[in-house]
Image (tube, rainbow, N blue to C red; front, side):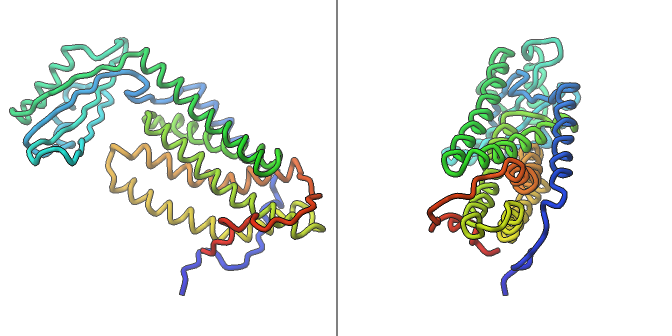
Length: 322
């Protein structure tokens, strides 16, 4: 017996209120952009600047103990990550401690670094500090520009890819869904003031890929059904296509969320921001594939005069039965 989260055959009408769903999406995007404009993002060390202290000890790295030892210093955002490497010896335990630049200062002062080292030496007298590296505001500014460029290029590449594979209406629908997902993700991070660092940029690019995959599965089946049902109007074809791929979409999203929620609960503080972004991205990405990308396609319309049937459209992913 196979697990089915959605019945084999469904007939939901996803477009009875498609204008309402587009309006809700537009409103959420406006709220997200307003939050970003009003209070900005809670940038982490990667974008704000700071200092990285590398530690080495014969004792196992205890992240909680390290954090507790430095808590009285009042240094704000401190990131502690244990470094794993198969070349390390058994008594070679390495950690990376990132300290954000304090308000009004371009970098972490030598006194602050010395205080951190003193606090850790009180915890472990044999601890060593092989390296101390600082990230200044100029480098942080360049990282912000590079991150924005990376996301913009990814979305631009998607526009070209979908345009070449399908039609320009499909491309605009897919890009609208991706912009929707990215804006809402940035908006939730701004609203909740969750730390925003390079890991979140990686999450944004992953969300773009996940959402695109979901959208292409639906669009592939739409293209196939447009040839199959030449007398049905576009709204009917879209409903049929989404219902036919619904089982696959729900199973993929639910199984992905199960893994992500486990990581969020058990993975610790180091990856919690990244995992939160992925959870949010899977939810809004699944939503946007239907209620944004497909709704935009319905609004723009698409030509129906393909002369040749397709033997491959919709067969790569959409026939997967969850």
